[in-house]
Structure formats: structure tokens, C-alpha cells
Length: 151
Image (cartoon, rainbow, N blue to C red; front, side, top):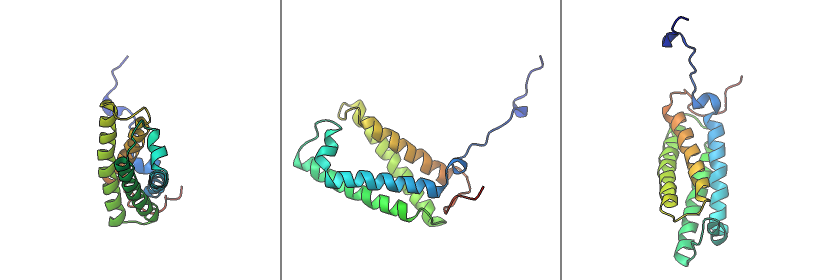
């Protein structure tokens, strides 16, 4: 049997932009921000209880502030879902940075015992957002925003 040269193997050029457009990604990011933001603003104690015992007025106040930020980011992402150009690239960069730091913070909280198993949901969502925004922003997919191309 002859050896196979690596260059002769079929290559897959997997790019996030071929799997999901920035429009689809920003729609999902917007919905996540709106849902989690509303939960944190309207029912913070009940929402945080799913993560463990995180009571206290200071924590509740901070959760509401975080929820307000998530609501704002959700509105930005949802509003930009059909936009294109530099504005979308800036939103993707901001989403990438926010999700990367938020995911690392959630992972740290889990490893230090400060979050229950529900913290893994945060890590998964933040990983999705960081990878998606990073691939769309830096992956060279050519997707600068707008609706998904027709097949």
C-alpha cells in the first residue's frame, strides 16, 4: 500500500460563517441577552437561587445591574442582526471580549466552589458566544453582516 501524502487528502474549510451567518448569530445572542437580562431584572433572587445560596440585598442589586446590561446588549445584538459593515464587526468584537471574560469568570466560580452545577450553563453559553463571535469577527468568513446568503 502506497503512503498517502497529506496534501492529497481532502480538506474541509470549516468556517463559522458557512454554518451560521452574523444575522443568525446576533439573533441568538440578542434573545439570550433579553431572556437572561429579564430574569435578572425581574426575579433576581429566584434566578440566582438556581446557582446556589447567593442571597443578600447587595447581590440582588448587582444581579439587577448585570441584568440591565444584558438587556442592553440583547437589544443591541437584536437590533444589529440585519446590519452590515463596521458596526457589526464592532458588535462581534464586543461580544467576543465580553463572552470570553464572562466564560472565564464563570469557570473560575465553578472551580472555586462558588457556583452550583448551573454555572456550567453559563460556561456553555459564553463559550458559544465567544467562539461564534470570534469566528465571525476573525475567521475570515467574509460575513460582514446582513441576512444569510441565498442558497
